Length: 414
Image 1 (cartoon, one colour):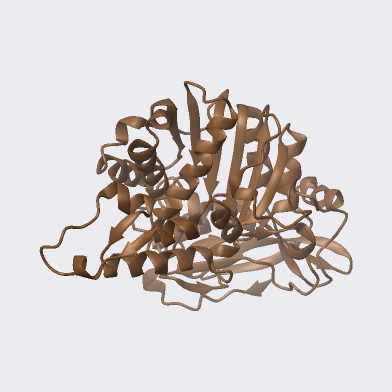
Image 2: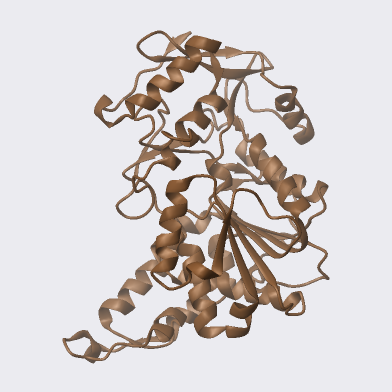
């Protein structure tokens, strides 16, 4: 075994969670890294995501697109409206958001639909899939502030028979992963032990034959001596989304790559990262219960899992391509800065104008919106998020969010 030392002060740890994990190891012996990560993030009482502590946003540990600006929700709303129209504008249109974070995306989509697309708003039945009480309460608060809480229901599983769209934003990259390493041509799995003071790592035979099968299906392996992550939960989720969707679309936003790039031999340490107050770290054993853990998604395997369960891939774009296709640039361009509105007592644009990006705005608001759009499109940041669009029981449709794709990318070709 090799010792793993935390780089940060112990005072920032959740001591009760650390002892709960150590207690399990004492009882059972070393556990897989996946089980360690699951306890650290999702322990029902103590896990990072189950804590009332703020995780998302400028004052949290990481920032997602809905926290940057409501314009992200407006663009997603536009795409959902087009999906509703592709289904012939049904009287009931299910929008199922899995892992809704702060509730900002649900709030902004519904607020936009209420103010600018009343027929869609009337048809929309919004469901949030959430397992933990603390984030569900934050979501309710965000929606209640806009008078939209009555438009949403909460559930712990994807609803059966949905007709509309299942969407997720940075859900799959937060799922617990197996960590593996290739040694002398053989896959070994990372297990986590406890020596009474600190967590320790050791390499063992894989805990499940699914891990070897995962790479056999891809017909590739990580490079010799390289570490990598295997997200079996993401494949199960993709299959479950396909199974529960009766007709409609699956819209997945997440950080990730195609398998050949994700498991390239130059990627020696995989993609696992931790975040605390927006500071990245490669040490998952520091600040247990106080830091986020994430790893990039293998979109080749996720896409194929959906296809094997009955989905048809319409395309995959970067978030930058997707938002530009939906007109985020035009939305900003139609918002005219009005220097006279910057002073006290000046009238501000209506909520509808601000949310649609039309009309006049104060200089402060205009430049804030421009900064937000730049951040959402940044190729080195949020703009590099991948957007996978799949469908089931839907006739051929050219979605606006995919219209900017280069030839060969539509349809999700490898």
